[in-house]
Length: 281
Image (cartoon, rainbow, N blue to C red; front, side, top):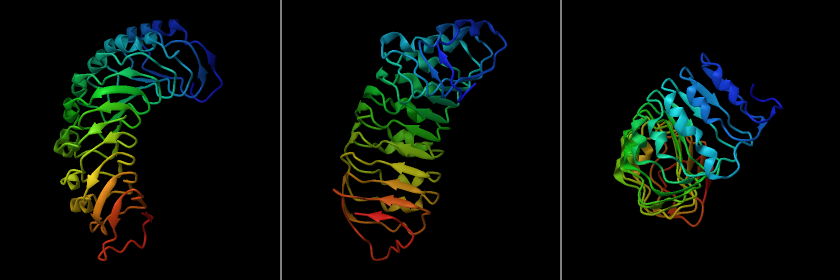
């Protein structure tokens, strides 16, 4: 039922369809709340309600998440692009162990990321971007070894990014070494926060990384030479930081868009032929 002109509230009676496995009513103009009774749908695999006008920027908007912990078969949950408010409940760490995709981005959700988020060990996509989250980024995120996309941009998070993330928004503090642990990571976007410190020297261990966006933070120091080992990389955004020194040899990358704009103070490396790159200082 996605991409129609549906409006009004979601009927709570949908939760009476006990055999329901997939419910997609995204890209409409639905209003009101997401029924907590959806937790009765024990066979639910896929719930997509993104890009509607659900919620009222209030504390009760995310109560449905607690009910969904009963949906033990759930694999995908996306409610991005609505008007959901309230504190992110700790109960999201108790969602289905089978969950592969969780996107709560582009809402008005506050609070902090639950410490036990690492229980969702099969997560491949985690989107919490453009909310009002604060507090520390839990180290247990490093347990999400299947994670391919992690978007935490445009929040008010604080502390360090655990170095353990690398195996696979306003953040501040350094980027720890553990971020190199998530070698399955394909996209890493921490732009638009207040990260300090420098890029981990072992960033090249992220051998599957296609997009690295760390723009508009307070990062400094040298660009690690190991960046040249991220051979699949297509997009690299590092503008709006305080990097200095020479640009490392990244001639082996497939980068199509590379922006190292001011106030960075990096200097071109004569050994680097940037003939196919968009390079902005």
